Image 1 (cartoon, helix red, strand yellow):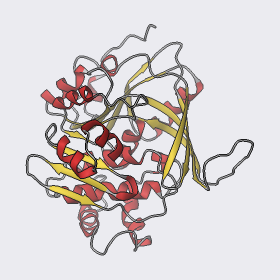
Image 2 (image 1 turned 120 degrees about the horizontal axis):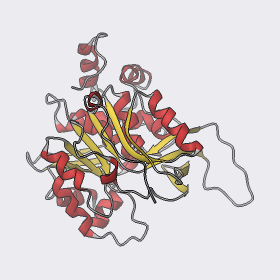
Image 3 (image 1 turned 180 degrees about the horizontal axis):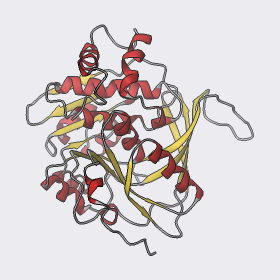
Image 4 (image 1 turned 90 degrees about the horizontal axis):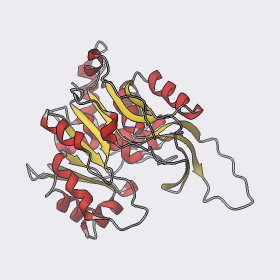
Length: 343
């Protein structure tokens, strides 16, 4: 299949890429807070419903809403869902210079059904017929951080981004074959951080706990982070030896769609705060993810910076006393004249 010619975007777009996200884009239709799994022949209604960009866009939505200039590199088609998704991303102020149109291909659509503490996914369509290397020009944007879902084949742009000083935060999708080929982890040599969930982490490392998996992965990357949904998160900084085990924010989880991506993007953004410890960066990411899962619509429910203080005030039991004093202090110190906590 032929793709549209790839040309470098105008030079001014490079300055927009404080955060670069690269990978598979979806259109998401999200049904949350369901009483249970769907039953054949039955119809279930829910008021917890949302629709919007998904997949790699989850990272981009969080970056943009936290005030970080964000660019997205992904394949789109000429179909209606591609048009709608482009419009939604543009409305968030996300730079679309690195979207590549693939003639004859349509954007996959995922229906997410959320119940209990998790969700089930059904996707219609086919994966993008081009890899991430085809999405980017030879001269990469000067991003501070990049986020990517690792592909089966090594992407050469990751090593180039790392060489120019970009910190690459990588995640991985579920392996439908459940072979969990450990050779995938060789790509981590070029990454700053790896952020799988506990099932993926344990499967790839052959361990039987999130903390053991995080420690094993810490041999490969400076920062390994293993998320476990309602069980919390483990982070290991292999350079300093710091280990953090933190609980999630206490909320009623309406919709867990994209929660891991939301956490990962918030963690990557928080890494720019040299005055925040690893524990504080993890806690900030827990907060952003917690607010998101309390709302319908997956990552489309991610909060903006100016919502955080009000949300914490309205949910005094969401975290133990004092846990988020550092966030409130940072927001206060920021003042009304600044749009972001992150440089």
